[in-house]
Structures are given as structure tokens and as C-alpha cells.
Length: 180
Image 1: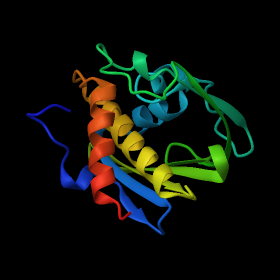
Image 2: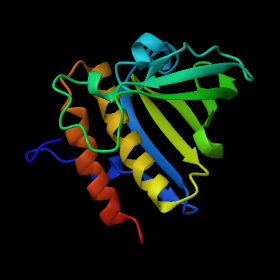
Image 3: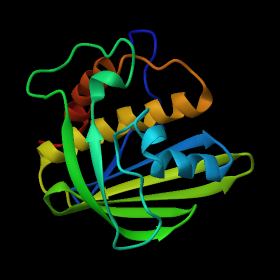
Image 4: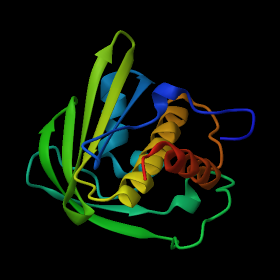
């Protein structure tokens, strides 16, 4: 995101229950292609995190490996306090290919991603629950927002803005939007 572009109001996470964020994006279909970007580690690495492929059944484990400096070229200014790599062990809690994927997240929270065909497009709805604090809502709201924008760009064949520049701007926006 730069001075000439800004996210649409509808792109921002809706915060509910003080520790839940909900975001939606409309992506080019078909739904099977979007599903592949969620479950195939090689495709997921282009917009979120690599690691393991997600096996399409509840109870299976997978690892997510973030290397955000590798998401865009250039990556933007790397913020203080972030390492070059972050790893997270997750477990699939629900899976209904190609419509729903739910999994555990660090610190007792969970993520559910639902896909719904809309003609030749796909509505993606992501809900991240049980974040536990304003700071986690802020960090994850801005993070998911930036990563989903990157997914839209990747699937649409557009060159994305530098990841870190986008995340830093979104974090400031979310900080201003969330009640103290």
C-alpha cells in the first residue's frame, strides 16, 4: 500500500467479542484454485506461510513457516522485533474441501476459512477467534489483512505492494480503529 492506494473500508477486519477478527475477500475462481492456495504449501508460501501441505481431514497436523521478507520483491522495511522466520504448529479441526478449513493457532486461538462460489468468483471469509488481547487483535487483524490482500494480488496476477510497508501502514490503521 502506498500513498496513492488505500484499502477499501470493506477490506478491514470486523472486530467482535473483543478478541475475534473477521475478514472477507472476493477472489477470482474457481473455488478449487483458491482451495489449493490454502492447502498447498508451495502456493500458500506466496501469500502467507510455507511449511507443510494441509491434509484434508480433521486431526491432521501441519506446520506453517513464515518468511515475510520473501513474500514480495522488495519486501519493504522490516520492522523491529520480527525475526527472519517464524514457525507455528497447527492441527486441522474441520475440513470440508473445497469449502471450509479450520485449524488451531498459537496461544489457544483458532482460524476458520470458508469459501463460497459467487459466479466466476469466490467469497473467502476468514474468522480468527480467541485472540485474547487488544495487541493480538491489532497484530493479527493487520497481518491477516495484509496477507489476504497479497492472496488477492497473487491469484489475480497483479504485482503486490511491498509486504512490510503494507503491514506497517495497516497496523497503524488498526491501532487507530480499535478501542483502547
